[in-house]
Image 1 (cartoon, rainbow over the protein chains, first blue to last red):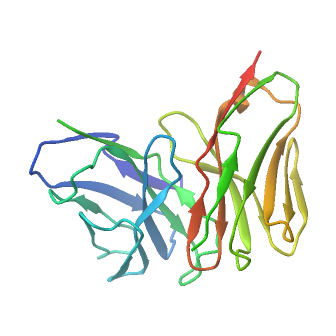
Image 2: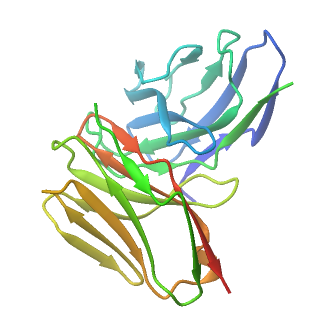
Length: 115
Length: 110
């Protein structure tokens, strides 16, 4: 089945620790995105990548880092600099490169909590 | 930048009744308006979308209307069923970025 796979489903971070969230897609989509979802708020864009080896900051990139070494993979690292990391993290992808008004498909999310 | 407002934040309807969720946007350059359904602990799923050159789109029990002049668009669900219970998000896109509403929690009472 084609789709977007996020892992793990639940993740716990200790203070001062970096953690990495995995996102893999087999849709052959060029563009991939990371969003953060907090209760009662809309989705906020962390980072996006339109092509391999290139990525751009979104609205709330501070405290996060990404890489795009392969077309199908876009891991997100939540660094110790992110002081309020508890949230539901969503990875998404879309077909076209350089165009945001294409259909956006989401993974099932990772819930990150701080110990 | 774009600002998307969504109302109501919660909505309860009796099974079989209709549900309407409304969103407004601020950027006249927005040209694509998707609606997503999110069930608890899962990622949002695209249920219907509309582009700015169309005023209405329907897919079985779900329809979306767009008023470009007033900068608002609405989701209409008819003959609601318990499985329609979820959080619904609207979004707009200017061609540069998606902007999301804050969500509507819909409960369909059997």
